[in-house]
Length: 273
Image (cartoon, rainbow, N blue to C red):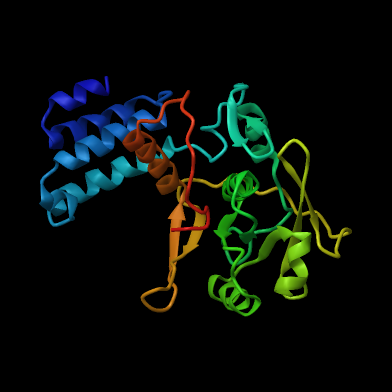
């Protein structure tokens, strides 16, 4: 039924897609929906896309709301029963299956509470690699992730904590003395395990009370806040919602031709914009 939309004029297809999603609750694969929407969006007149044609604003806004209704949580795209490798550490010759990764991300919890009507913001300072990749997925699923470079200085980190209004930081125990922030912000220690997953403990506060478990991030929740490099001036903050992140993942997979059976070698640091 989604393919039929492609044979219509873009404006008619947008209306048809909205009517279809309003009429039927699916299940609709989010990836197929966002691909159909993107294809139709590219064919719309410029006046519709830039909001100049106010007649279409309401229809587009309603369609976006319906698309967000079908958006998944960060943990959902992970194949919860698949034993295929999801993360691979070639140096240690170890791997994590989709099933193990799904369970880790699903149950990861730091016991932090919402404050000021927003999710807690957690800075992650870990070596680039599978450990950081696992932390990125787990934190972004339930909190707002703020990935940081390990090359950051203690003074710069303190300024960044203030700029992003961070609530906690996640790091290796060996790095705590270097950054000297344990008394200023909730600090969690990552303890790597032999099977590539890790345990977390709170620095010097093992008896802290447990807060009610937060729900996974919804489509409009901030999944990630990135710092720009600051090469052209003061570093800026780039907020990324769960909806935008999931859509970007799908578009990246499509642009690289990645399939469920593909293996991808990431050459970029995971804290990078």
